[in-house]
Image (cartoon, rainbow, N blue to C red; front, side, top):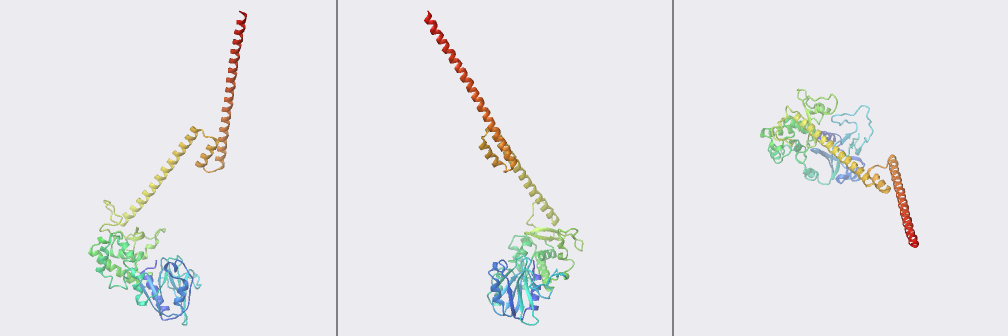
Length: 426
């Protein structure tokens, strides 16, 4: 994300190519994220700027704006990957365009394009392929832009507001919060313009661990932090974030190989740097320099570890424990499922369900696969055969019983006839 130095670079190019000139043509293509989320539109943008003169360009932290000859004035924020390109001028701050790169104009992912009336004409285009940038119009006098939303909610700019961001101001700000010092620096409501790499550079220069609570810094640490904020931000702005001019000992020159094979993990002075996650952001830390001198957000009582490498190891252990927990939970679920399946099968055997009931149970427990259907069919036939056999046996038994009864009745009848004959003879 473009930070305080990169934004200063673009303000420089706007002053160089646009200030003092009239905008002959303004073209914009609407983007519901870039324009719409801040109540603006491509149509309103075109109407507000066309035919007007560019008077000035200014900055507060990561925000910058163009002062027009009359309101409204465009206020912009690059977001994660936005940028302003000038035709026939290389504005990139650390990754120049490749020789064979397309020079089509307007460039790819453009949101608006400007052309001046003066000859030779200057052309500029705002681009953003990730669509996190924001472009809005402020309908107020130019001198009041910093007094309205969103700038009024942002903290002082370390370069523009040196008279506000004093050591005394910083002491009060640090003491008013109990959060990691890195998180405090990144919060634009506290200080404008400090992003991830600038924050890491400041804390390395100040020899402060990023996780340490802001309200636990000693007076000496606070004094050094104040100096480091102005040094890193001021230097980055002065050289327009030209990374080729950064000091060789800065983390910026070595930190970008994270995750790559054979990437550097040691600074020129021999100090090793590691990566930690602080406040949801990846932080580059030099454990031998940035030691913990007070409580930190991740501290566990009695761990006795005071450097970034220990924290990184702790994170790995925590991750492994979480994964192990998930595996154990998964095993328990599988075991329960297996037990339930066994119980279900036992119940079926004990109940000896009818063909209709058995089919319903199978469909609930098993996916409707063809083999299963055959199996169910087979099971159903077996049940039918069993019922037929049982019925046949019952009929046979009934026949035998009937025959026995008939024989008994015949025998009794014969005895009665015999008795009557005998009586008659006597």
